[in-house]
Image 1 (cartoon, one colour):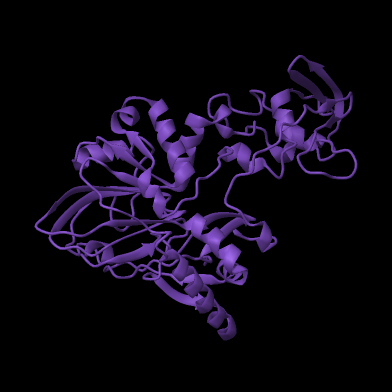
Image 2: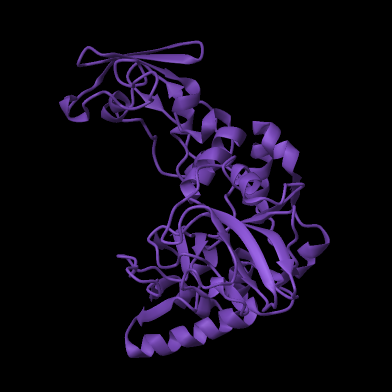
Amino acid sequence: MSFVGNINNCHVHDSKPPVLAPPTIKNNSIEPNLDTPRRGIATIPAFWLRDHCRCSECVHPETNQRLVDTFQIPEGIKFKEISQQGDQVHVLFSDGHRGQYSMDFLTKQGYHKHRSALYNGHIKRKLWGSSIKDDPPVIDYESVMSSDKGVGEWTALIRKYGFAYVDGCPATPEATQKLLERIAFIRHTHYGGFWDFTSDLASKDTAYTSIALEAHNDNTYFSDPAGLQMFHLLSHTDGEGGASLLVDGFKVAMELKRKAREAYDILSTTRVLSHASGNDGVAIFPPVLQPVFVHIGTQLVQIRWNNSDRAAIHAPPDRTKRWYWAARKWNELLKSAENEYWEQLRPGRPMIFDNWRVLHGRSAFTGKRRLCGGYINYDDFMSRYRTLNLPNRGTPF
């Protein structure tokens, strides 16, 4: 993942794909309609279509994995005959193989610019600031636990807002773990799997203290940071404080782009090293360094900001000076009152958020707080979202 394209085109929303007309079927060619203008007539190559044959000889009917040996297909394979019967297109190839393809499958091959929207679903993200406090996204615990429909609605809320509360969860680690596992299995790290912790420094991390934590993303030292994170406050006795902080990183990044485009560009291209090395036997550094803003093409897909875990900035001295300038601009916006959403967590109301988008923190506290929660991989979250919300699970075939 890297920054590509003009900074002016960067965005956070999956663009809505246009409705494409079915391809033109001829005796010796298939001509898809494209979602991007181009000169001339586009045709689907015979080799590509043979390699993507969906028959039971070429794709395992249960595992959906390719069986055909791609490199046993003749390099110069051609169409011998193409015919359409209703919604199905039958193809005879020059190697003698007969393939059958749905018009829906062939139509989807015209999507290039909007292909990710087919995989991930078109969703208009709701960017928010402090005013989200008046109407935060919430779903009922029984709805999530009793049906996949409820889980689908829950994952859709998380995709739209970047976080959600679950009301009515029993204030126990056992119930919270079962709730989190309604999305996917819990990710294990050097902190363990499902957490149940207090501020006792059981792990050498400031999260296990009572001091204030500024807005940050977790796992910036991993190649693949956790996608979701859940916190459930089980109890807080003999003290006060500990309010939770959320900041919509996508909203603030777009604000930075509008107000200081050079700063956005620098934070999108300058790679930063992060580390986890406070615990005995742990020295984690990502093998490939990433910038604060991670893009696929021109779409911002991930924020990696954790000043506490930041190590070295990998850039020439003059570029390093500019990085600090850009980071200061970013930090000022993160700490703007209009971008900070503060809320006191309470037993019975777990909070889950997208760690690739939403930064979190907390105020200092006194007394003893007991929390539980855990991580879920981003890919597993998206898998659950697709299977419960998208036609044909979002697959392009």
